[in-house]
Length: 92
Image (cartoon, rainbow, N blue to C red; front, side, top):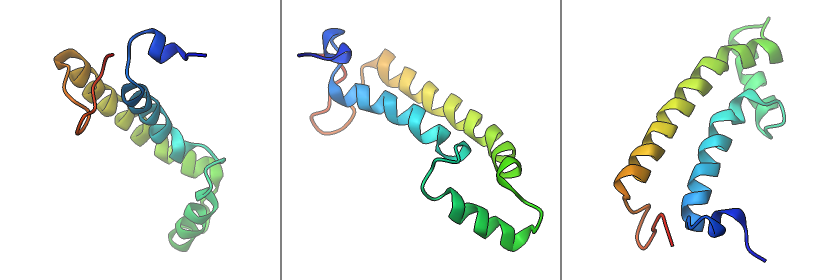
């Protein structure tokens, strides 16, 4: 059984790089992140009125900026067919 990435000719490394871009940029704005409660606790040290909504709304601009930046880097890697790492290729 094959997956969509390999059927399209993309290497697993490239597929994982694209996945990690989407995953890492949205981690801070989801309450399901394992460290979210710890971040809230540290934030309460400096602001007693902070809550989940305040933290998420504060981090959304950063999340969007990181998503744009990482996506632009992915496009550069894709267009110039740069290696992902030692022995890492984009296409099979």
